[in-house]
Image (cartoon, rainbow, N blue to C red; front, side):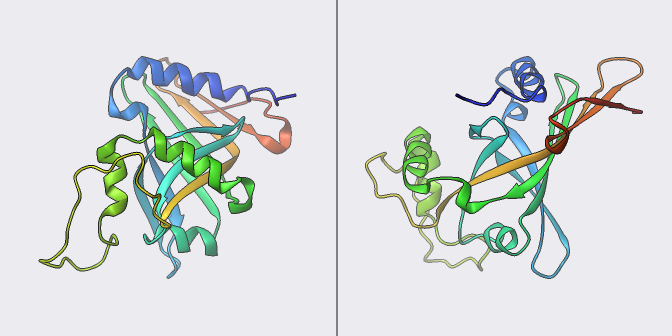
Length: 187
């Protein structure tokens, strides 16, 4: 039997629906700790839910995120949806063994557009530009999945919502270790 959805999931879905086709409905910021101990934040695309409290993102394993999460698997996501006047902060741990990689990677690969798949045919990110670099524009779904196409299934342990659409603002939090019971906080 499937686990019930945590109470914050429908709130995120409702905010996404209010955002409509705006990129903010899918773009979120992922914070990690760099190998030198400094913070790093980057924007990624929400790819769906891998379970009731598991969020799926994709990354290039050659990027800095991969070794950062391997060394320090704790993360925080900030997801601001301005039209909906909602901010969600999700905290948890990356657990690489939490997913059977092959079928899930295949599913995510198939869901990408040809232009989206092409990003994984590009040269390694973050390295110096070379005049000889080639940047594919499209890649078919039948193309072999590159080894560096990495699914990040992030296990959410804590969520905070800030609803800016009311006065005073509504701020509440949920924790997995407290069976996702809501706690209202001062905004």
